[in-house]
Every structure is written in C-alpha cells, then in structure tokens.
Length: 52
Image (cartoon, rainbow, N blue to C red; front, side, top):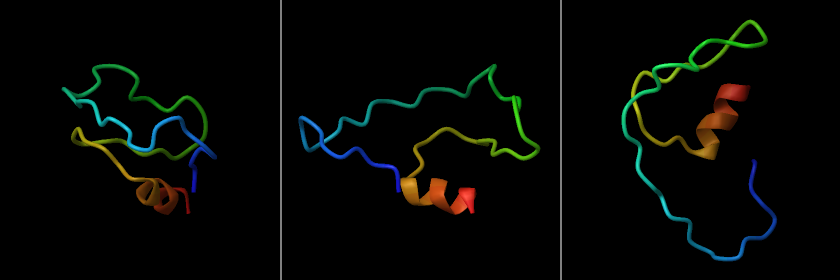
C-alpha cells in the first residue's frame, strides 16, 4: 500500500471535508474511473481494492 517511509510526527491531523467538488469530475485519461457520490475520507485499503 502507499505509505511514506518516515514522517516527522506520528499522528496526522484529519482536517475537514466540506461540500462536493463542482468541477474536476471528468476522466482525463483511460476508460474507467471512480466517482465519489458523497464526501468523506477513504482508506488506503479501499484505494487498493478499487485498483484491482
């Protein structure tokens, strides 16, 4: 999975997810893509599952 080798601090701040993107929801390359239907965070396991 995608993770950095080392970081300065152990715990990452989460931040806030506000609203959906009005633009940037079209596919630039390839045939298939994932589109978010709601806001929120996704885990690295979900990204890996979508890649396969």
